[in-house]
Length: 117
Image (tube, rainbow, N blue to C red; front, top):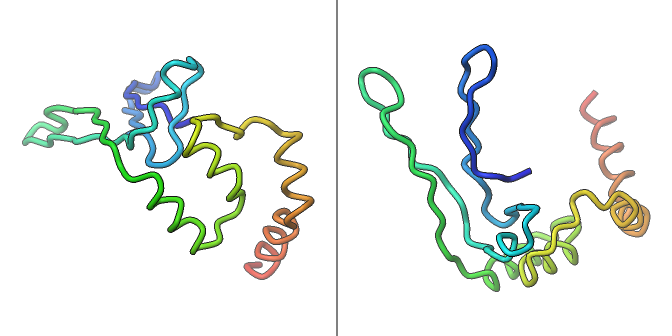
């Protein structure tokens, strides 16, 4: 999930997720409508991390969609819905399986994996 966050593990390691550009996610419907790009700015000083700023900035969703179409990205129709409505389909296994079947995504990944072996 693309939540902006910083937390510590039980081993005191820092886990930092700066967020997402193009696929933010929030279970709260009101917050999911915020489709701005998310990022984090780290300030590093002599002792390590001196500060973290979580930021959001608006960007041209239509231009992003045009780039995605040119690149012929997988799940393009679902990505378009996300960019226009904020609705996320990442966890809809039934719908993703339909797209995998219709567009041959699973076979494409398996062919790539076999090629890399």
